[in-house]
Length: 308
Length: 283
Image (cartoon, rainbow over all chains, first blue to last red; front, side, top):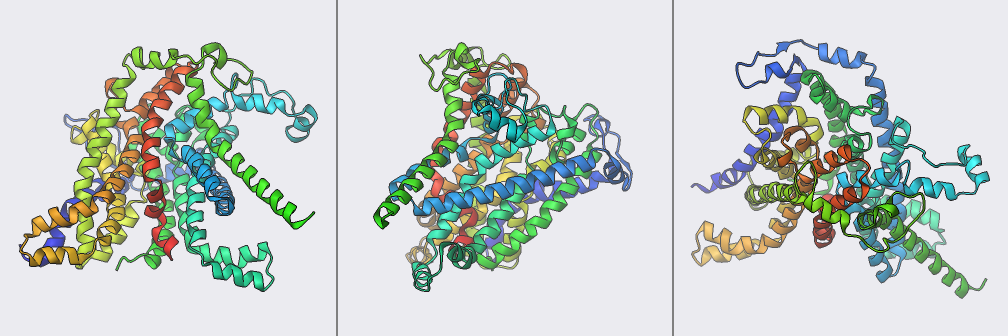
């Protein structure tokens, strides 16, 4: 084999897999979104070719009464979960940096447990913690002094409080469970970033009489900017498409008010009367949003990593 | 307050915060495990019972004998293991070849390929679900564990190549050149020199792919209808839907699903960070 051919030969199998299993489906998704695809078009024995409907699927989803609630749920959840994860992760990262080495290792091993729990198990654990009858959350809320509970929540008795019926409380539990599972990654990454900042910078700041808040704003944050750029984008992408935990907490697709874009797309395509074209159109909207965010990530990585 | 006292108090507060973070992270997992070992009267109560007393193996035994949907939990653990291990083995071969290409050779389209990798690894299974399902059906892979393997190889490969390429690049080129000079063939240089040195990286990358596939929910949810072929995530989902109040058994099953991931996680925790944000942290 001529030596110029070798890299292409090594690359070919992987590239074929990516083309067949990621790029072609991406194209097919867009194609399906312009067709009315149902089960009769997919059956093994003489399938009917799907009818081309132009932009009809898109007009249908934009006019659907599920569009705004799903988009709102997607955006609000992503905003809340990303903000809380980043803030909590940063605080824990700073804490880990200041703890002694034994204590810091102890906390890292602990947060690893939350991080390692598989998403299906995460959802099930939090479903159990927020169970209306025997959940520990209602027990803990009942511990609050009555006056405080009345002042903050307008109620004192939490026995039997159902958390997973209303969209708002479903998303509340979802936010807690997602933040719980994702802050460890942020904290450990921030810790790695903090360790890479040269000590001299802090010594110089101290000599100049800079306080802790000024030092954080003027030295730590700017030095961690590239880390944050990557972490925020990754978190947005992960939280934008959240499916497993939402599906399990909301109990499948029965509660339409609790849909986000991925659950809606799934419900259209695999629900009672599957409308795959419609589901594909929702997936295209989701993918476009994700690709815009990915673009920021790719630009950041290309700046810092050696891809040339 | 004297400076010494203040310093002591500060240290005390920091350690207190550390313990609070530890408890917040660990408690839900602990609660899952402890519920799995509690007798029913300690589960269905409005009181707080911190430890199972005495611990009961009833639920664990029940998921192994009676199981879920008429299949003992073994069946689903084995299905999940088959899918995850096959995905890892096939993916490792593809990833190693491609990673060698991008980190050992300079060629046209190299940069384009790396950027393509970055973009496609961000496209989630949730978005590609519909065309992937249609494709699997056309190929006769619906309701087959093989179908899950094929789709998971596709979904995990971009990240595997991306991560493995830094391990290949870390092996000094001079070692291979020395083997060349000694008259080794291209293949034996790769197999005898490069491969053993990249092996630890290959293990780390494979553990990543294993965890991703082991946890994978949405593809298995749409592709698998036959209960005997359920993987663990889908078995759990079915379990919760079917016996929504049997929390002891549900927690026992969740614990069984979590244990392998926890073990693997502790093995690769350091690389978890470097794989995703390496460049950003270094810079």
